[in-house]
Image (cartoon, rainbow, N blue to C red; front, side, top):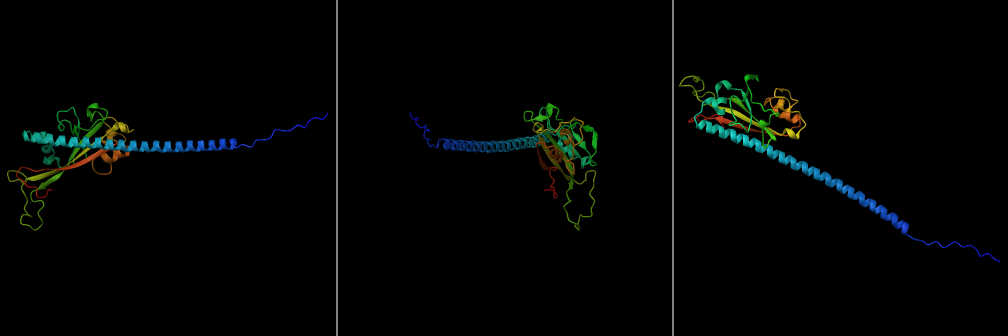
Length: 268
């Protein structure tokens, strides 16, 4: 009896395995592509958010500065119109001859009835020495009363007396009155136009990691200390805030105190 030969079943050639491998590769490539696109989108949205935030911060700081300048100018006009004492108005106080070269700073406190108050100012003389009897004007980042714009912004103003412009100060040498010494006292005293520069700086402490500092801080390592720096020189208010990465904005305005009936020939 013959045993039939054992035969192997025929192999069927198929491309299913190859197709499955190709699909897997395509899926992986698609996933990688989606990941890259997602990462780019997130990065772009983060950049857009930073740009939008920076724009909002700049607008908020500009509005705070602008509001402070408008308010102090309006306050001074009203005070002058009401014939208040000379020292009760900002223009009259800083235009006094004894304050030539002085720097007067005060915080914009929204709960105060007036911005300028001689009892709430900090004054530095021409030698950059702080007057001990006038040291109550610098902003305190730890005091909620010193914040404006819904408690987000601190605004401090500084006015610097730059000098007196006499009525003949623009006259050239060799003219008829060039060698005449004007009287400094009495009814014949020369009338001058006083020039002073106003600086207003607003900051948002919450958007920085810089320490607020104590009210007595004088160094450049805290926001409170930055407010006490000078407006010119190496270490200024602006350079201090910039070094601490504190969002801030400063505006500058020049004023001329022009007496009624007097033309400031050397003024602008």
